[in-house]
Length: 168
Image 1 (spheres, one colour):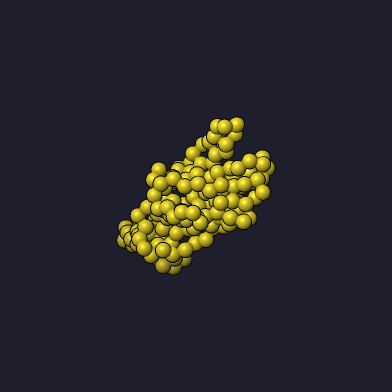
Image 2 (cartoon, rainbow, N blue to C red):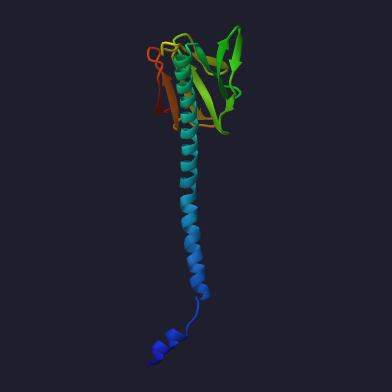
């Protein structure tokens, strides 16, 4: 066996310099990818919350059709809560209120009757499938003017809801 092969066979482990170089590369890659991953996680959380609101709207419509009663989707822009209610035998029945994830708010509500930036709003769903209609904008609380938002539009004729992504 030659001396070169014997030296390679007798070596064990890595030198300190090799370990330091690898750790520097790992740190560099982590520092470059972390902001991208954090923005992706924020965007996914934003989409998930918007889908939950849209799901609640669809549930209210389907219950109104099934039970033949008026169901109301209520939202409060100040407390960042939303809930569904139905009036039964002269008393309103309220389901559990849900709160939006931290950092998100229902920043704007529009309908044919009103435009609301702060306060409580409601959307009625009727037994024939139609609704009072409107649009709910879900944004980040500290959003800058170039950040995207999601708007849920509720068609007054069909009562169906649709999510649209928009840039403010």
